[in-house]
Amino acid sequence: MDMQGSRSLAITQQQAWDALNDPEVLKLCIPGCDKVEPTGENQYAVGMAVKIGPVSAKFSGKITLSDIVPPQSYAIGFDGQGGVAGFGKGKAQVSLQPTEGGCELSYTVNAQVGGKIAQLGQRLIDGAAKGMAEDFFKRFDDEMQRRYPAPEVLAVEAPAEAAPSDAAAPVASQGGVPVWVWWVGAVVLAALVLWLR
Image (cartoon, rainbow, N blue to C red; front, top):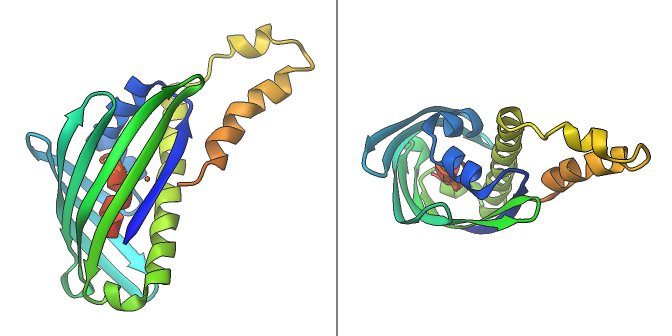
């Protein structure tokens, strides 16, 4: 399975980098995740519950970060086991680029799945992966807005007629961009990657 995508974030590149490398943020944002724990330098143990079609399973696995270039990019290797439900392994590349309104997160994921999950069919797996990635990014956006609220001063200084459209623009751009990873852990793609396991 191959996936790629990008997402506009209304936070700085450094804020996004820090959040994608924070196990607590990832645990909050990854659907079904109950554990993201450091196990060594640039290594994490992950536990999560996944449901794809009729198959439900508890997955446990490990994530290893490499090719780290703070606060711009890293690669994420993942390997997870879900018992009789199957396994997943692969690699993701995550990058953050500063933009005028915040930063752009881009990711590419290459994953292989086996066992019962692999028997469900590529369309069902792809649809579930994309849905999970969207869910991760929505949670991530919500958490970042909670931690780094937009300054209200801008709305006060803007002309009365322009305030509603100016205030709505960042929200629309955040929600309108489709899906990844991790985590990542993170990593943003991590969420996606973890799910793919």
